[in-house]
Amino acid sequence: MATRIPEAHKRTYENVFICKNCKTKIRADPRKITENKVKCRRCGQKNFRKVRKK
Ligand SMILES: [Zn+2]
Image (cartoon, rainbow, N blue to C red; front, side, top):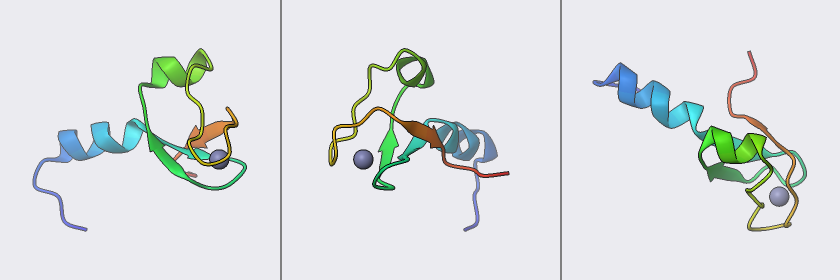
């Protein structure tokens, strides 16, 4: 995927998390993830990881 605005692209990806349980992508404030304020809308769990593996 070509990106014309690298900063926006990076920011977008940094705010995307994946549920460890059902692999659903959720865009949220990283601070909220840290504070466990974000629930997965599919399975209701609060275990998330960042979208990039490496
Ligand atoms: Zn889930």
